[in-house]
Amino acid sequence: IRLMRAHGYLLEGKPDSAIRDLEEVRVSAKDVEIKYRAAAMLANTYAGNRKFEQGLSTLNEMLPLAPEVKDRAARHHGLLAAGILYNRVGEFKLAGEYASQVAGDGPSGRNRCIAENLIIESMQGQGKELAEDQIFRAIEHCERENESLLAGFSRTFLARKWHGEGKTASAIALLEKHLPGVEKTGYPVLVAEYLSMLAEYRLKMSDIQGAEKHARAAVAQGDSIAGSLPLVMAHRVLYEIASIQGNPVRALE
View 1 (cartoon, rainbow, N blue to C red):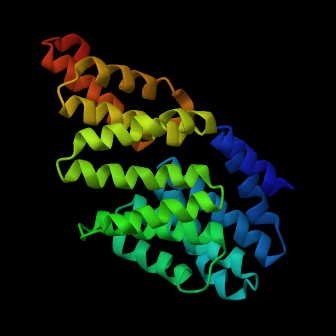
View 2 (tube, rainbow, N blue to C red):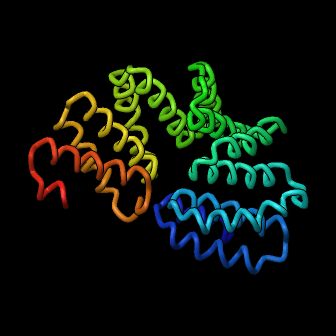
């Protein structure tokens, strides 16, 4: 029940409350699987908040427990948490290895969706060639499991691919099309991801007004995305706009 409550806090954008519950469960639980599950959720949360030192420390305690966890879905959850965190700290090859372990072990639908996302993110991070079909399959698998949040993240990989290939207008169209659905999820990190990417890409297209609108909307997500990469990206866009407009005071702010 406490793990479920922590999950609810995360969806509401209250990571500090979730961390408090999860740390207590991780330390006090006698059951290995419960301890492992709590640590996996903690690692995920620290990854989302960019508290990498705490996240890596949690992984060091969690991963040795994996062989003792008999429930395959639970074991996969921890390995995927490792993949998420390692992708966030730029250890893309290691992240891909953990995600591939899950992908090759007959994962459940949701875990398959996550593993495919992590493998794509890992490949992008390593600068490897990535086929569009692979991303579309990941989106399809996530949607089949009614995982709208994860499908939303899958589309960010497609947008990045298109932007990297010079198809920025297509990337913007993709993000704009799915932004209303993403906003309906109420998940601040994903909403901010879309908004900050739109801000960056619109700035590249010299759409100053559109870039500023999306950057300010990302910043407005507030404490729920504190310390996150989308927040950094949004502030950078606002700084660049102020610089372009010759407003050094605003740029400094």
